[in-house]
Image 1 (cartoon, rainbow, N blue to C red):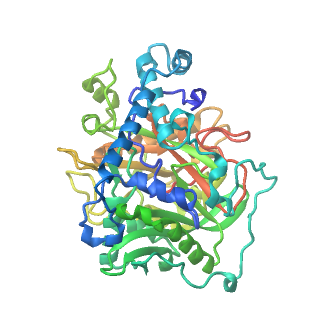
Image 2: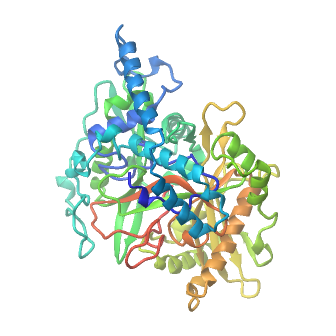
Image 3: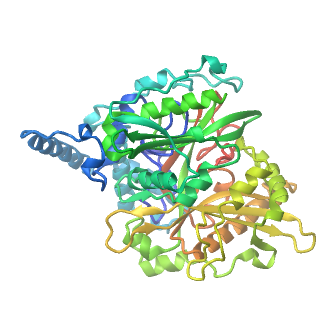
Length: 576
């Protein structure tokens, strides 16, 4: 591990929730690739994610999947665990060089002041130890210097049309492999292991979307400690999987032949992308999930190949996808930031902790938000159908600031910002409508009635695993936003845009708090770095890597700047 590359702003509330890191079933999105690496490491990563078996009975999956336990097997496992425990104990010792601790503390004081609670030496040392252990767990470092995975070991990716480690930066953006005519694409599905069969999911059918929901709820993305697991609702999946132009054939499942139980899933939805100056018809790959008991069957690589085939049959040969793990080769990397809202609950479920010089009461005071949105007297209101055209034009102008963005027509705007608003009136106790997954607000000039700004956020709760009091973490995620302020002369240099976005997203946080969310999350993309610190977001552990399939381009600015862009402004895509 290279300690010098640690983030300088070690926040006072260090999050252990890392929702999209080191997950084979992560938001891995791409044809014939997605989150995992080569076929073997894909299966190994899934085994790591699996942890304890799901709640389903053994009879629900093929008997061949269950591990056969002979008399000697328990002792072998015990012995193996003992060796691992000793190795981890050694790593947990006082192995962080004092010079490194001093360097990080000095950097924190330089950026946040001498009195910053984040500059506590013991806290910094403990964090460095945790990051070192995490590097071992993620394969970035080996026990005793052994088994460190080399970038060239990605055998599966070596065969794929993706940029590879060591490649020089391309002089011009473009495809890696040319598109094929339909007749040259494989016409038959890829073979599955014995006992399994393919199934195209019809998510317009409530029974089938419930099957997807139940599979993801029990087996999808967890944090590193398996304390939190994403819980995609049926309403969320309908919103995410049915954008304009969606294809039924891109919702692919695997079932057990004997009882038709759904045990694996992957999806794709069409997306039009602009990458710098080139427009692409692409697919966004998502929700790769394999039942925990089947991680050794290597279903994930077959799922990836099959959805690639289905995309090729539709004439689509480029894709965008994300993953917490590093595979060849990210076009950008963004970091998660968290704005705490319900401090007592977040501490209780160990999403965050109380620093030694802090109390919960003081944390509550520091995290408290105003009771009324700042812009409530300046024309702030919920977006309506009559706003679609104006929001579409505002979105188009604003997104020209970024290098990689989705190209939304009016029907896309209508779907993304209105179709998931739920039904009926908002409930007084929750501030939400029935089935609501997205919140979108506009600012209408009281005099001209022009739409000058909009912002949106969506809900993605997580199951809290094995907690005696809390079962659900209510998390809001910042989605798309735009402001006419960006068009004003010297808006960036004079700080006008930063001030306006701070007001807009600050109101989004207030509205999320009123809707009983526990935490508000954002990534270091778009213009988010302008307001994260001002609005009391804290740096999280999670990193999200962005990838393009069959497309070569220079790196885009995410959590770090590039030669021509400040941090965030390379990435204008928010992945669900």
